[in-house]
Image (cartoon, rainbow, N blue to C red; front, side, top):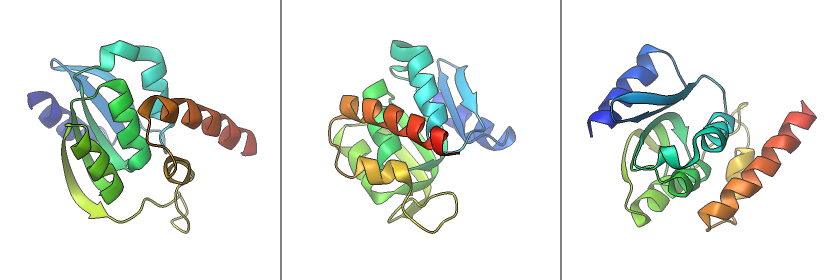
Length: 143
């Protein structure tokens, strides 16, 4: 649990949105919004993420599915959805949160996050990664 404690401290100290720590070393950190940073971490680090600890500002079902896909062993989120909590619990991933919410909203806080909408119909973590990468490209094209 030392890696998770380190990740929690660094998340706030560095004003990050996501950090991944393993064996006392920071594997990945980002200030990017949504889950694009985590998708990039999975792409760059692959199997190195197995048994790492992740601290995130916001974790919904989409992030939880990616944690299962990547083999993350412990998760902390300042804001976690109940759906994320369920996925993490079902997959034996240790998890903590500051605030537990019903749903994760988009950046404007008006609708459900697009990744959460996509995650609603997904139960397979490997499928989730592929579908989120496609959605990421679509969202970038719209900006």
